[in-house]
Length: 143
Image (tube, rainbow, N blue to C red):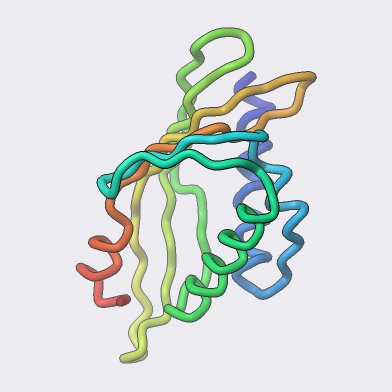
């Protein structure tokens, strides 16, 4: 489970960075997620479906990341907590690099905990828990 989930997140990182560069394939992005999912952060808990609305929200999200100067997202750390043979929590430490408007680049580290289901050898994200992204961006002068 660990090797296939790590390979999945390497692909997740690659897809994210291609989208930051404007090379978005929304079908490839959507393929990372299960048919339904849950997201939790200090803003609350939300549920969604892997449908056209997800593709639209993701495209808008990548556009916003580009607009605020996001240059790259890199996996800094990776750890798995298995729950059973098909489910795990992937604890992913990310480092995001930004080109700030004042010219000084900044790197921000944060963690996201992904709920992953693997069926027929194919991992998919069905949920995630994250911190307050907006507060972090404000604290570093990005927004």
